[in-house]
Image 1: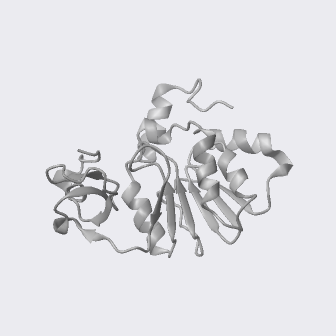
Image 2: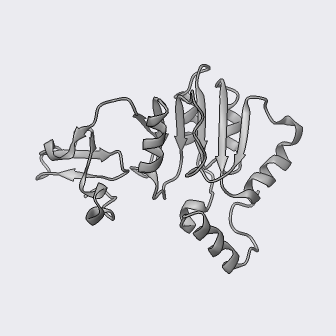
Length: 210
């Protein structure tokens, strides 16, 4: 299955990206390795209702459907969705709902317990975090903040105000990560914070660890 833009005209693709408020890397789908997919599958249960944001060619969504109660697979690229559905055909699982829509706008269904966001280039992490949290979703499984491995974020856990952190790594609800202090605690796990410098307009570009 083709995962790039193929033979689509550059001007047409640019218009599509602008219309959906995406940059090229956000909109471009590329499959991840088996280790990452297995890590996601290990974190879900048969009682979970999952929404996959940026479901691409549906390869993970199909596997999730074998393990959970229901899956909402949201993908903005109609070309990818059409090709995937053509390959799946009449084998589409009953508990898998495939939605061709921009996940920035799609209303997150009530009852969702797990959000999956495998997207290393994601400018809208905070938007997804807040919307999932607002509907009572418990877990966000993602590689968007640290750019490697799988992070399981407890959306119901309390966040520490950034101003109270004096030393150590942090990860913010907006998607930013970094280190505060003189480097005396490099081996400690990150503290979940809110209202970090990147949350404010003047710090909006500070998305990477120091």
